[in-house]
Image (cartoon, rainbow, N blue to C red; front, side, top):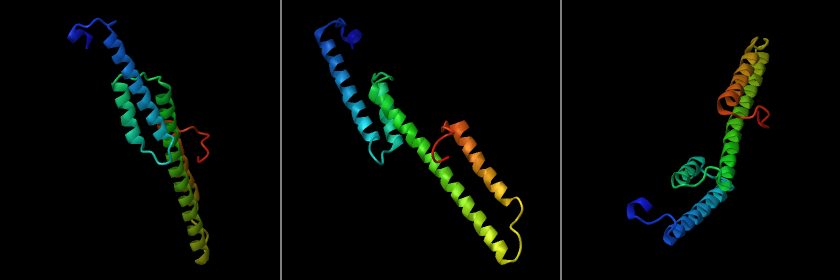
Length: 141
């Protein structure tokens, strides 16, 4: 703007525009934070809003942006961990059903089936920790 119209950087109007832009960024970043603090926010939509904020000049270290990103990351970890927990519970239920069916037939459950199911769960946990960054001590893991 300054280069195009030849206004000196210190011009009153330039200062007013900077102040207005700062107010806009603060309002928008606070609004994004409010959204992320809600129950069912859309992480993709919030991510796009943060990208837009950064594109218009919001500082990456803006408190509301940093807090929003932390909330989004926690939500991602919670979602991944919950999916793994549900998978583990399903594997446990399937193993119990296999054992019950074997007992009804008068035979022993298949040897090693439970170990294979446990290994699948452990592999999902490893991937979540190694590839997605989920803390290994997450409550659902």
